[in-house]
Amino acid sequence: MILSANQISVFLPVVLMFLVALGFVAFVMVVTHWMGPKRNSKTKLETFECGIDVQGNARSPFSIKYFLVAILFVLFDVEVIFMYPWAVNFKKLGILGIVEMFTFISVFLVGFFYIIKKGALKWE
Image (cartoon, rainbow, N blue to C red; front, side):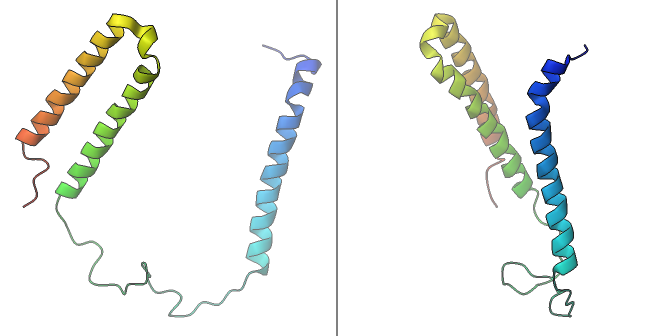
């Protein structure tokens, strides 16, 4: 598809704004790097985390339960997001929409009861 001169002129302000924004970002990064102070000291180069001194090795292993709970949260949170469009279009979908949502919620609850039965949310 070849664009005509009239079609290109429609996009010209967007392209110019993009180039100006990109140029501004590059300019500011160069100027701040050039003008900024460069004072490296032992204290400045130390590891710092929320005002708490470093304790032990950061590579120490910890329970996989943290990852499991995080993944389950994301999984069930995303499933709840799918319910929002259904709720917005509830009247338009009719009886078929209700059947589909009950099927979706049933699959959701089967998965939820499965992870409870497996003890994925129990902490020792």
